[in-house]
Length: 336
Ligand code: X3X
Image 1 (cartoon, helix red, strand yellow):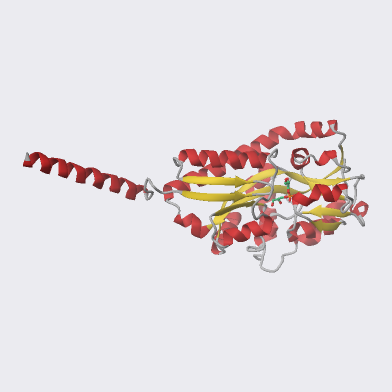
Image 2 (tube, helix red, strand yellow; image 1 turned 90 degrees about the vertical axis):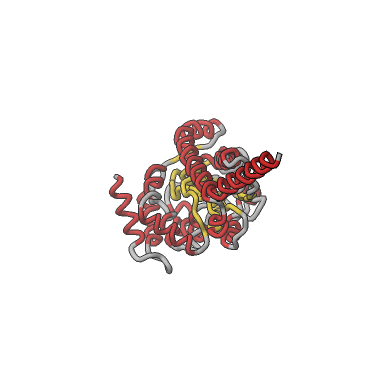
């Protein structure tokens, strides 16, 4: 009897020891759970929203429920500059915004998001894999911002107005809505417009009420948020900015997550970005045809005139790494 009791006791101790060893190796006990709130401004019909939901679902499954990413579209939670501020404050929060909003912390990201740099999605994707961008990401981490992705591309942004625009002079006196970051305001001002920053949620009503004369955005924004239903039926193919979003989380929060889960989260956001970019490349011509079916008219523009107007924006701004634009230009030249 006594020997049996001792044997069972040793067995129980061994089982607990193995269990504890197993969890300490993985660093994540079975009871580990983290809820992250993910915020962006896109509408339910837009691919970015669908992609974020897909990533959240995959992460939940692959971490067996340990990492729950709750997604909040249409600026239901802090977005734009305020969303990035939540990350910097160390909240359990993921901000999905374009890199110009990181430019407030690392000015080099304003160079990465400068106008008329990229001729294709692929050029930008390739550039983000170069050492120059890795260095930018390292600087962001020094500011408390871990960048999980930079390539949730939602299309080249064009001018969307109620009249045909071909040259910067055509924009004279026109109020064009932009997001609130300085990169957009400087870009549309240099193009000849009166840049009028507004949150996306106020944009379509501002167009309807004549508060602004137009906006700028991609065909995917146009179709996804039904811009085409309003008075702005002309799209001038300036392709002035490549609309793309990054995914940002606090470095403090990131470092607190067990490594096995960090690997899954990083892999799924990277996979989701590649998946979305490839999808939109395939869909673009069909979306243009769909918009034309709704009465939208596309026109080419005097690209040289707009490039000349935008030239001053390639001068280094305070805080930028000396030569950052030259480095970007030479990397892009090497791809062409
Ligand atoms: O920070 C993310 C983008 O800059 C948002 O751009 P915005 O405010 O023109 O919104 C794009 C739309 O597609 C949102 O539905």
